[in-house]
Amino acid sequence: MRISGSAAARLKELGVELRPGVLLAEKTSLGIGGTTDLLLLRRAESIPEVMRLLANEKIAHKFLGGGTNVLIDDGELPWVALHLPSSQPGMRVEGNTAYVEASADLGGTVTFCAKRDLGGMEGLIGVPGSVGGALRMNAGAYGTQIGTHVREVELYRAARGEIDTLRGGDIRFDYRHTSFSPDDVMLRVKLELPSKPFTEILAGIRVCNEKRRASQPLNQKSAGCIFKNPPGGSAGRMIDDLKLKGHRVGDAMVSDRHANFFVNAGRASCRDMLKLIDEVRERVYGAYGIELENEVIVWQN
Ligand code: EPU
Image (cartoon, rainbow, N blue to C red; front, side):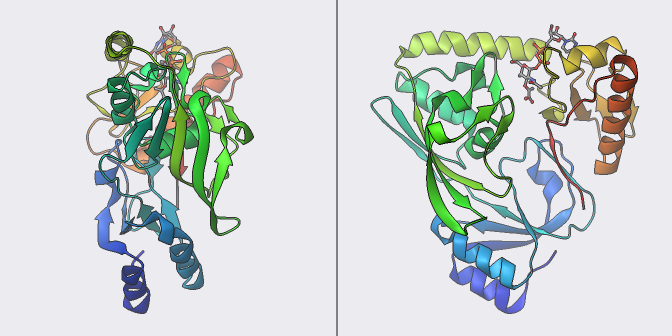
């Protein structure tokens, strides 16, 4: 979708940088995604006004975070992509509290806090993406989940059209699911982290990195795990047991390293990836009677 004329001029006045015709495949870890205008929101405070403008002009939109857990449709997209660019360093620490912008890199945040002797997030070190995306999905790995440490979140609440602050205790953080509304936009978070000597945190980080390197296809284009684990089970093990590693539709392929990672082994399209997801889901359902739920967020036209 393209923005021009008075809407483009008004957006510029609101501090929005408009990048026309961006190929979103270049903004996602899967390397999949069509073309649209990208709006960089350089001033989070202007979001309510930007959103009013887009609504008045009937310009459909989606918020793109780190692009690491999303599968975007091919071709010309019927919506514009909004993105909060990260500012440096985007975080600070006071005592046991870390104040972090949602656009900050999650791994960078773990390291920043570790260097200030604040731990608890070691498991999240290799999870790619932004802090905002991690909050929305309650990202987790190796026994850590970000929700445990959240004390406050500042966010744009689309339903009310305003910026609001929620206390950690008022937010539900479940397995890869939160009580945020799908159109809420994360802006900043206050995390409370336990004190730990840097060397100890570093040792924990190294263990997680090694485990991840040994079991996940880190040097291939993927969106992490495609499916959530069913209660008490492992999607990766079920897909592996069905001998589906290496199974492909075009260039979309079940990783031969970890069966719940689907990789773009070349020039995979969204259509290929969706077909692969459907085929694997059906095979698992046929064998185990379990319907796997997507972990990856799909933006289909
Ligand atoms: N397994 C297989 N074959 C495979 C993959 C896994 O047999 O191809 C077996 C493993 O041997 C293990 C079990 O399945 O016994 C679980 O595997 P793993 O430890 O790799 O964990 P997972 O449940 O597959 C989850 C998260 C990952 C996270 C790891 C480490 C989900 C959907 N996935 O994977 O998160 O990194 O634990 O904590 O919850 C993500 O969210 O994108 C993600 C990658």
